[in-house]
Length: 519
Picture (cartoon, rainbow, N blue to C red):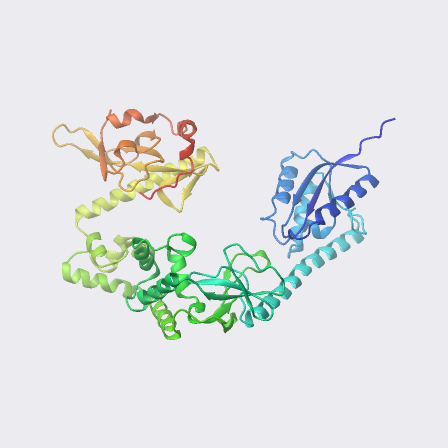
């Protein structure tokens, strides 16, 4: 008689680092022996090589296993795991129990092949399993403490502990006796465990640029954004060949290593948590073995400038320049705000809107300006309502972009949403719609909407695959049966948007991932 087939089962294997070359093979061998002894047949394998067991978000194998079990796609009746620690070293033991309960609830129990107790739900089994889960989590916590202390001792000795060298520096590998070996390039690591890494000065061009950035902040009182903008205008190459941004300029100006002070532990990601900043009192500080690029006096002066510049202002401090503007010009407008270097968004975030800001000053714009503001608010609300309707028609497929009402994403593809302002000619009294298309992305799907005369709702909806020949203009005035609308698809129902959008994307697949320009 042929051998009777065993119960179909899936095996889950995991190893923490890529250095454990034979860990996966050893686990599979033990699971195979357990399957033979208990009449199981392995039909599916889920693996997480080089994945930590502390969190689940970086373990695609376990996520795929749970997804198959919960959705009912699993073609097996049991799950075989080497031991409790392979299932996970979660700091919260209830998390490990929750994932096992999901499998058990679906009728697929979990078997731990190398444990001395059976996972049969008895009191002794439950107590031992809870103890093993606690031990697995405690092992990771203790190991993290030991690794942290080891790195801290290395940093106190003046050596570099991981991370990029930074703009203006390079990493030098030295021997145990302090003899320089070679400069490490990006992506290279030290060869021997006894070797150490120190920072050395980089090319002279980078050193001069770092000193220029500190002078721009200290002498010209420029912030990170202004510095990055000027450097990019000068076509200065940023870190690792990229462009300069607010983040890398700010990080350069606030890093003590540029004044010759080696600091480690400014941020932490303990137990695979999110990156968090650490207070200056808990930093690991020691004199670096390489000289700084700027003096300590220059560095401290920049820090004082930042402390004063980024200090939160009170409401009266924000309103003071507006009061001077109102007293001098008798009015406040966008042109005067831009000329004075004031950001409108700062007042919107603090007081809710520019209208509420003006009310605090006891000033009210004229009727024409207030009417324009009211119409702008109506258009913005119509955009938000249209996006909500699309989200209701296809849940999970429409995503708003940072609460921005003039653009959204369709399955990751950016779509511009434009609603034209109503206009009417003086002679023929025919309706027109003004669309502002300045700074729009040319290669992006565009959803065009004409509005009713009283701004109470949407009149017609059109879909185009791109701006086309009008790209580069500041605005365009459209009318019924306009030639530009001949190349657009008129949507009789909003639900037709998904069908036509998919057809346009299939014709132009290379434009699917184009970034969305800010209208």
